[in-house]
Length: 282
Ligand code: URA
Image 1 (cartoon, protein in one colour):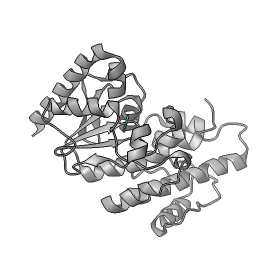
Image 2 (image 1 turned 60 degrees about the horizontal axis):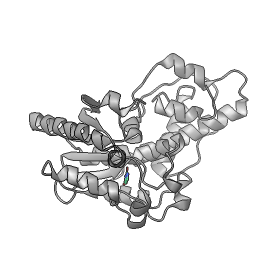
Image 3 (image 1 turned 135 degrees about the vertical axis):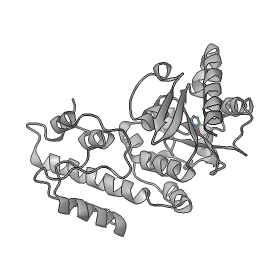
């Protein structure tokens, strides 16, 4: 396994920090509270392991993370740098996890955490009723979304709107729609793991504030971020999943459906599953 993205991998495994003194963790939390960005520098021994306040992904095996964390032959300085970055990332996630809706919006609109800020026109926070019981999670803004600052306003968005209309839902009334990434990847390329990891705290905080009763996740990267694992949409759809106690229905991305019309029937089944789930809960 490559060690290039060690902190990100550990972050995704929800196993950070493992090799950090308690006092360094306290410093990181203090820095987060004070809004400082510089992480503590030295990392020397294994003492503490605590749950991430805003885990991006469900925990897996401790031994696999331990194998990643101190790879034999990796220079100490590089390990320190990786861990400092991970602490910084953790402090940022902790701070974001405490923001209110308006401050979160401001934070997203000024975000420079990854390189996508350089090419974006507008950040895309979300649209709809923030009190809605139904949340649609998409992937990333496209060209039109980047121009308008609103998710799903292109062709895929029109299809999403008609899918929602077919079950008496709409973005103007009883649905909130957001993306996993808040900025457009250039040329609509796939999101990079670092971009997803850096944007995930915004998504988690949005969900915590909206408190939907159902999440309808469309497309591979949305599903990967919400469920914390990589799998094909076809292997995940048709059954209920869970995000911190909220039922999740997985479906194809509307942009995919535009290119694969026969799968629209399956997307309809997914909408029915979501509707029934909400009906059963409500
Ligand atoms: N695709 C998405 O996932 N989101 C958008 O906002 C537009 C297209």
